[in-house]
Amino acid sequence: MSIVNRRNAMIGWATWTAVKRMAAMKAKRAAPSGSSGSSKGRKAVKAGAIVATTAGLVAFWKAKQRDSTDHDSVAAEEIGIPDE
Image 1 (cartoon, helix red, strand yellow):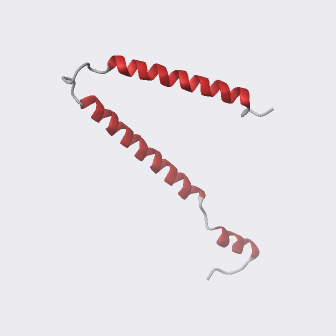
Image 2 (cartoon, rainbow, N blue to C red):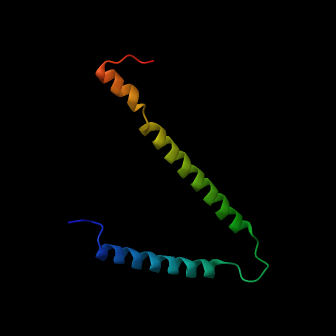
Image 3 (cartoon, helix red, strand yellow):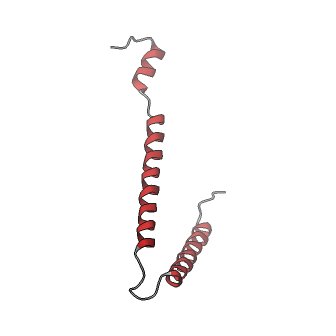
């Protein structure tokens, strides 16, 4: 039995939609009313997003570097062909 199926996809979609809607309503309530509010919170969110994106890219890049090996030289060692 597969984990990825229509039923689980629909449950995931419904959950994601509900969570997004609740988060939007909560953010709307927490936002300062009028134009007297500062953009300090917005800048903090943007900075956090940039930091999170950078951390994700670094982690992805490190994983790609760790996984990539020179397969030709490994195969040559197994066969007994000297490196050039």
